[in-house]
Image 1 (cartoon, rainbow, N blue to C red):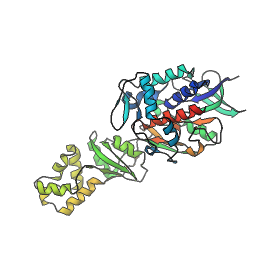
Image 2: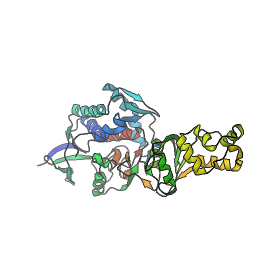
Image 3: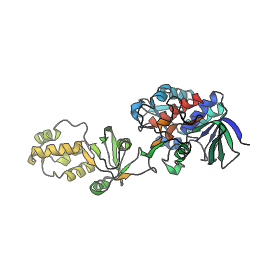
Image 4: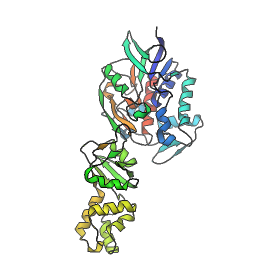
Length: 392
């Protein structure tokens, strides 16, 4: 006979642990199962090992989903201030790095330890090293067979196994397979917050590997003003990672290399310093190697005083909307998160419960809700987990 519980949570990551602790605090008998040998492995590597655990500027418009309004309810009911209060209750020192991003002063292990302690205080059982071999539903119960220990059964099952980003950490598309098994639609998963690769004409920028600069990067209607980094394969850095979530194959990434430049700045430079060159003018705002590559690509090599105004205006326009055509991304292996996932049309935005399968819940990265870079995805993990935990 399987051991019986009120709730089985599949996945001991941020969302799974927090959901289990929330439900356990309400008196539910909860067991968390994970195939990994330790809990919270993605938490441990996040934020350079310091865990960017939330963002003060969290708002629904900073998330991608087929339903732009789906995240609104959960985010409103569990806010960054709520999670920060928990962090402070545990005496975890933190700091705001930039753009509302909150990090531990010490180690991401403090966040994992806090979640584990919350589970312990709520009598939650955590089973690691337990691969899930079978899940089925019969007689109002979800039955879970694992590679270790007896089978389990519960009236409530939570899918919190995330997406396939960073497979070296053990990430898989298990959540989607399980969702489909129960008849739930899945929005095509794709890498998000991921470096983009360049080929063809753009490949000349590979010689700038390691060079970064503050830019304005656009993909479709989305625009992000942060640093871009040239790599030996293409483009990375915060601005590019942000834009990558909105980018689609066959579309360009547009870069404004001088977002603070005044109108007709190059014509002003011609009047003020006619013996200067485009490269020299660019070097005042950009790294010298980048200035040289841009100047060479534009093909204006003579002194500014000898260049026609219309040529300089064309150079200004190109520098403000430099067109890169990525041929792909570095894939799930380098993606920080997964876009797409279990369709929000299948879930209640209030409880995260599947409409067609009572007792089945999905939370965190497994769901088609993807946040911006900078703690937004952790806040979705906490908020969606809390919504489900309060309903279990």
